[in-house]
Length: 239
Ligand code: BV8
Ligand code: ZN
Image 1 (cartoon, rainbow, N blue to C red):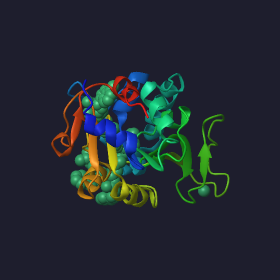
Image 2 (cartoon, helix red, strand yellow; image 1 turned 90 degrees about the vertical axis):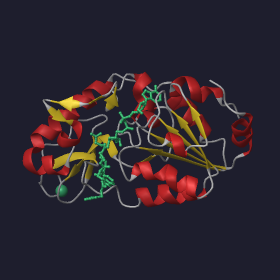
Image 3 (tube, rainbow, N blue to C red; image 1 turned 180 degrees about the horizontal axis):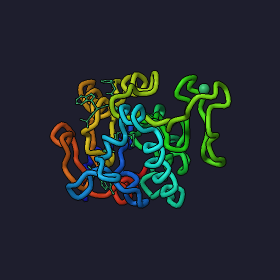
Image 4 (cartoon, protein in one colour; image 1 turned 45 degrees about the vertical axis):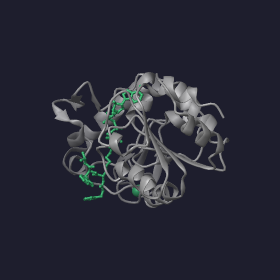
């Protein structure tokens, strides 16, 4: 896979870089993507954007917990791959580096990335449905109910039809407007408002690079498309 001389130079000289990732960056770690091989992830007969919806939390919170408990147990065995480690290395290589992810798996942080803007929350946290007190599930089990107000806990992830964490998208959009170089890694770019970030970067004059084995609705907007796996492509960038 050829990386243009223009991109190599820009990568060598850039000060402000933004990376947006999706499920594809975790694929080489064994995390199933949502839309791989033409079909969409299904849980107990429900497409993932049904079980992962605000409406389902209202209707059947135990079913939502079952879905995320299954995924969390699955994730517990998995480790970051070279794509995560390369991105973690980049954070100290630029004046302003921003990592924005749609992933809830926490693998970027496991690889050493700090200040990750998690647009869709994190599967290793629970939060109270009433007072929003958050509980980590990394080491310990979640309590049956909120220790502050006694109300039910839910996964601390953003479900379809729900607003993103306060300020998360606004910060990501501001960084996208300011960046010179924007990498879009492993996303099908179908879920909004996340998929709008590369458009914002492009609109503000950034050089936009897509890393994906398949074309996406974003490919035609990109200045350069690197067709391949993130774990193989990203380590080719030396700074
Ligand atoms: C909201 C957490 C305001 C839960 C997730 C505008 C237009 C149309 C619809 C909307 C719109 N605005 C809002 C909507 C509705 C909706 C939406 O976008 N729907 C889509 C389906 C059309 N958006 C929302 O609901 C958002 N909230 O807008 O709030 C609001 C509020 C009230 C009322 C109205 C508006 C919230 C969306 C967040 C939902 N939560 N995740 C969970 O994980 O279960 S979304 C979840 O799905 C992921 O986080 C991610 O965002 C998305 C999956 O996409 P990808 O990560 O890209 O994964 P995918 O499998 O699709 O693709 C993988 C890619 O990797 C592929 O291209 C593949 O080729 C590539 N790949 C594979 N292997 C590799 C690779 N790439 C590199 N290397 C490899 N090795
Ligand atoms: Zn509470």
